[in-house]
Length: 252
Length: 245
Picture 1: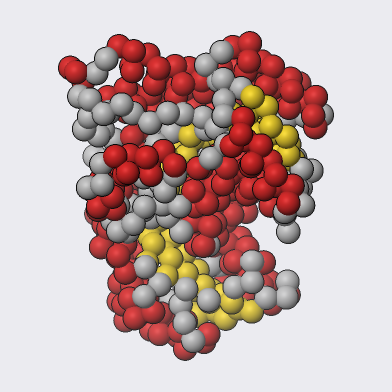
Picture 2 (picture 1 turned 90 degrees about the horizontal axis):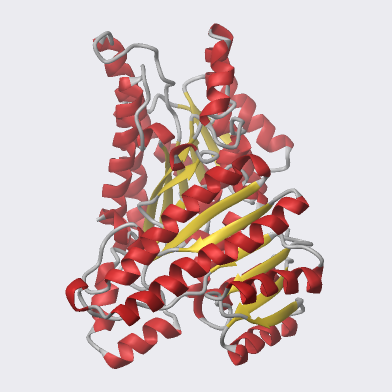
């Protein structure tokens, strides 16, 4: 039984990693998928992966930090498939590694702009469309760094805590309008973003692994499952929640 | 192969039916025989497989026998939903009588621990398993006039996190669910005694309604499934936004 048959799902940051895995999982559950990303090539690859498995998808080139592009993205999704039922606001950047006193302003601005303002802009344009339809479901990508602190990535930690707060605020505002808003808080996940860090700093592989009581990193598909579940009717009473999918990391 | 305690009504019954819908064989445990047997009958009527076992989960020998029976029935124990519990009373901390404190903590907290104790012993041998404990939104925030209930549910979350850490490397996941106020016989009784509670409960939830037992069941079943393979030690909130504000 497919849990999202006939639905339309939007995934930002869908060119790789968690976004790509979520796009594939949405399609597997019967949704038509709109992939938005600044990276066009990766998005097109995600689209063809979905098409090869018999699903429907389109790619839209979108920089989520620019209001006019985000507005166009939502319009584009509706133009392609007629509506917008599920939005997974997942586009984000990793943290520049520098402690609070040494962080550059440029890095700060870039990280907050993509990870936090980008999520807000997406919601800003998704919500009116969902209100017009009478409902919808939003999932935002926060992080375990949205629940606890980490050394050496202050802007990233602040941005992800911000996403959790923003998620709760929006959940309250639209609870009576048929829109549910939740966040996922992944631990460290095997994505290109993390693979890049590990190839620069090989000792991080072991550090990342040991952070998780389960003794391993998460796979993008494991986050995708949580996103799809939160987006489905099975989660009809879940709103304003920050779901940790972290192999026990934040429990310690 | 799934064990559901408190399976005779409410969230437990809805979960037994949902586990069965997903293809699991279910052992339904409850102290109330009629209710537990009825749940098992409902599962069988829906085409599933179920066995009822009478058990008082706050007695070690009964919890141990329950897990033994469960394994005996279906050969293994993949998932356990430790859900048996008592509802909130209506005394403030200074007025609560000791008997009520002991009874609530015995069932809601010690009962969960005893169930986990014997379930874990078995799951360690299998090197796999998933446990879900029923906490509550009052495992996360306080509530007026239910000190023992609030303390017991906070403690269930602490216990869940401890067990999650201890068994993370053994292939066993342990999570809790935190329902908001759910339309169960337990809540119906409170509303029947004090009709004004209906509106109060509704207003507690930003979505403007109570949960249905089936909505909590979906969360318990998802946490037990392989889709949640990287989720452990988590307190999953199913509360229509209650704790978000």
